[in-house]
Length: 138
Image (cartoon, rainbow, N blue to C red; front, top):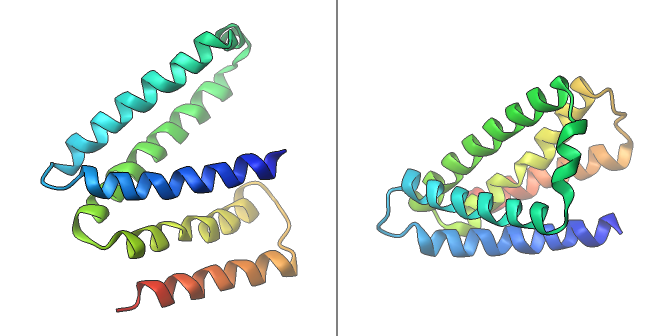
């Protein structure tokens, strides 16, 4: 089932890039990011409340709160820089470079999570990097 959700994530990420590129035209990118963030905030809290998942908040420990907060900061910074890049560059190239996050994630998962690098993962990461360079090269 996770692959289905991952595919949906990729589809919506693609739509995000297209809609964001249109949305940031003639708008300050920080303002655009703030508006987008409020929409995401309202949407996800609506889902949590409607599904009754708010009760799980009591089970969160200090470590959960700290790392979710750090993740939120990283997400916010990612969005700020993504919107700035979208304003200045072609969406196809910005999105391609943004997808380098997968290669970075693989490397960071080795260092911080102790995950194993298989030959398939290594080759896949190398192809992602090569493809990104090819797409971003003018």
